[in-house]
Image (cartoon, rainbow, N blue to C red; front, side, top):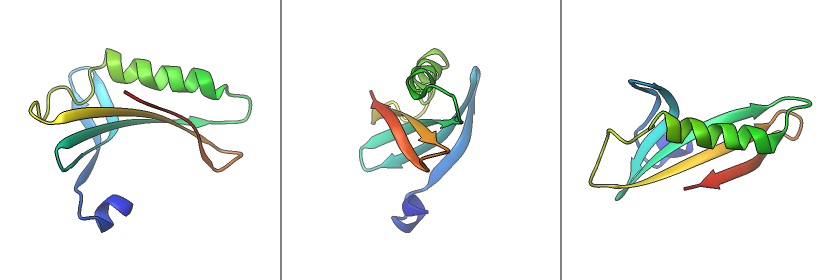
Length: 91
């Protein structure tokens, strides 16, 4: 909703040959690729974060689109119990 309010067109579940990223959008001269993980009771948020990072890299999310823009990848972990993002990585 925030992106839509800022008139930024965001796309979910972008397909490529190896999988689907969760969210991708262009903001100015940057192309953002985001992968979310959901932490349930007993899950290790650090492991989920590493899994999200590995998924972005191994499946080459966002690499095929907008080659002239700076690509920013984000991996985020949302905690069910805390109801907020508890871990993130930007690369």
